[in-house]
Image (cartoon, rainbow, N blue to C red; front, side):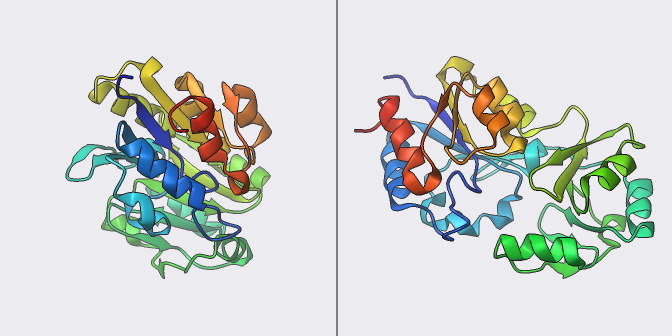
Length: 256
């Protein structure tokens, strides 16, 4: 069997947020898979927020992070694309008193805490980053997180033609440049590594995985995935709590 390239989303694909752990079957499956194939993370998270998967992090060779805005190997940066012309957008968010986060190359910050951002951090069992609404003035920003009602956020972002809204929760969104996505980042890495896309596999569950799973033909939706993700994928495995990663790898013949 020739060497394949595997992409894995993090939250609710590798890491079970409800139980705050990586399923044991996933840990064991990743260990076996890494002996014969190339593994990559594809996440909306920045690479400095991957502590949740520390038990398996060493098995991954490449990282498509910040929904495709930053691509790296263990030792070097392959591609990075900070956001441009964000001053007016951020000024509007501040004026509307909307809580938002900014991800830089080495840290993330939050503008302020409100009921929406508090709900997000509680749901994800995460600590608050430091508060710094002026971060963008002195740092490159690769992604903006935003916490509010969908209709209001869409109305604001629609006025800025250079950006798009990626929804991954009821009131949680990413703002990234248009023509950018986790799928575009994955495509860049596939081409950089000179893989045939038919030799690639991808696992995901959320709406920000849609472009990635549409691009990779051997796409696997977790049993707990959003219905739109299941529709676009070639195969739907079991729920993350029911050995979803392992069962898919068994189905495709990569492990026994």
